[in-house]
Length: 205
Image 1 (tube, rainbow, N blue to C red):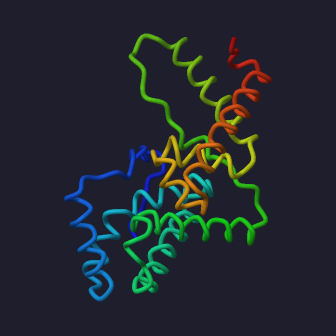
Image 2 (cartoon, rainbow, N blue to C red):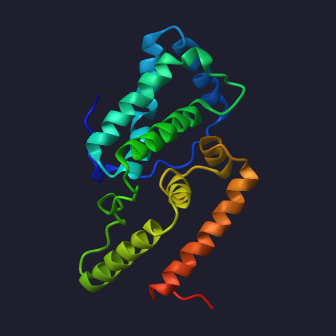
């Protein structure tokens, strides 16, 4: 298992890919059902993305590494069960990770929270220390507001803005329809807005 630097994590963007890339991946997934070398290629392709997902839900690099390894071990053990007519392979990995993290929190009897130190805003130009300080404070207040939301809504925001997933992809992970995710996203933004207004961070007309 490779070592990870949580501070170097960057959002990966959407999972959408070209038809050619999807075809290549489909062939790789089929090979991986009987070829460990092909599975290792899938591992290299998605391990950082899955680790990022797990880390943002545990806040602990060591636990994130352990759970990420378990995600791929479970995927390898159940490759024959994966059906390519359903969700994409990476969404299947996310679903496994989602279930393992849920079990981890139940076992640990912990309240999950977004790790603040992992959310690093883009660097600002030198010579603007006051602006940097204001932005850093705003970032911290925003993340604390996110932490105050129910766990499912925290997950939705991270999947949307950190992992860059679409409503359809998030639905495949959380076991909900695309329409249900769209509705939950709207309600989540309203709740976040109310929380930010209560904290005096932002005001909407």
